[in-house]
Image (cartoon, rainbow, N blue to C red; front, side):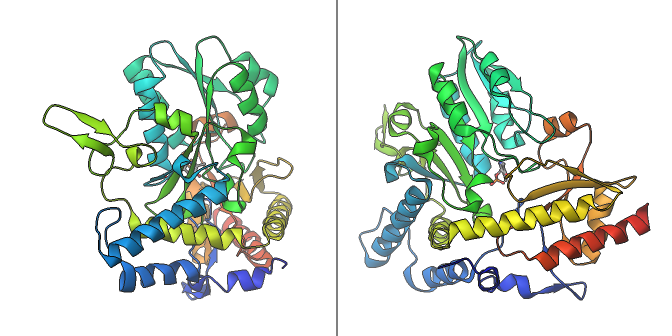
Length: 406
Ligand SMILES: *Cc1c(COP(=O)(O)O)cnc(C)c1O
């Protein structure tokens, strides 16, 4: 089995549509990824055949839905290589995972004067929940700088630890620079200092399975809509012993053991953290998406993404009016750039008219924008269904934008 980019692309019905009479070149995958036919079909099958609430009914449909929901949890366990499905919590997305973790840790493990280490390239969803703990609990945020390519200096990282460090909250892969952090090393160093480490895997998980045990992280967040799955679903991995020690975040059905007028006791993880009717369809759709990616020749898939990234960096760098941000060796398929003298929003609008969909703005990374000395960038980001022809279309559309704006 070798990865066949054309066959892979053919699995995505939406990619054959046009916009403004031009073929769609969807290069906004770091914002959200399109869905393969297996996921679309799975959702249709569920809604037309096996839909009911989970964990509650004793009837056939509820049993089928519950089995499918718990199978999806097993797919997520396998994809992340968690030790047990009990370590995988279904959330409503990436942001929801950080807020769950922040709330639980804030009630339990982080208080006045306790320190949290973050890098300056974090996504706002891995910043704001920690600002909440700064505002509400008196926690202290300590910032680790990165270089222009997003590389972390491990000595600078080590130097941030004190005996008050409780948590490191760090991205696995930047959604702007594409850079990977040395997450395994960072986890080892955090544990040397008896601190917990939570990683943002919203980008890093998209290029094939990851191994949370080998990385040695305590908590790990992923989001379904970037993993070829539905929106409104995400994953929070947590080590079992840690999850068992954390209080629930949301209260309601299913997360309880017993409720009386005087008292409440809680279910075990992961159910303790899944209050109410969960996103049933979304979770099962995500499980299907994860099985679909894991069944690919993942090395071939990554090699194709790498080739697209290299091609895009080369093609854009060859334009003497373009600045490219982030050139870490082996980085993920995200290429942020600016056209001299043009606002990235205008650039994105002109590209859009050529059928080229990119993102422009601060990408929910204002501290990183400050670090790079810009207020915004355009960003092309690739998935394994993109083509080299689309990279050329991007470069052509940038020439056009320069003609119109420069
Ligand atoms: C998308 C993203 C998030 C937020 O995930 P949502 O599912 O949109 O809430 C967090 N971190 C990174 C790196 C992301 O790319």
